[in-house]
Length: 278
Image (cartoon, rainbow, N blue to C red):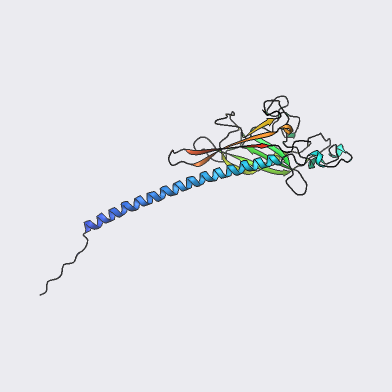
């Protein structure tokens, strides 16, 4: 009788050890993959917030640069008809742009004072701004209205460490005026605040319902009057503002993986009014 040859193989204990080692290695690899995915999502969200804020500041600067065109002297002089809503040169007031629009309540008032004083402006203010500019080839003048969520408007996002996030809105509408009477540098009956706009920059941390703090709650808009003075109460009218400083503090909604806190970025810009009233 021939002797059966012995067969080599793994024992049950050896298989269990191999499976345990494989499970440990697989778990470590999956953990690294999850960490990499979480870091990618955090970085992508932060980059999206930064890019959105950068585009927002760039657009604001461009809009303010183009504000105030066309001015009164862009037209030939013809006979005036104030009762019909024409300027002294005979040009319809809806075709003339002032750089910054002054508002008292819902009424346009270019005699109001920026940042308080006698007859203070409701708009412009640290959180809202209305400009006039010719943005269409048909010659009409448009109102461009920027506003940060005001007190009483719910925050766009729920609290994510550091308070609710707010949204900067941008609205565009054709300048419309009703009259008579026509008032110089003024559009009677129009309301550029009627269009509340669409979300423009999200995840903004500044809060219009809180006191202005240059460090923690800076104003979105700061106005420079003639002579280089910041808009102290009663210094100038809206159409006399020479420059606008812009600050946007934007926070990511996902926490940083190292610190556990949301990441913050601050973008600043300065836009000079290139078309003052003439």
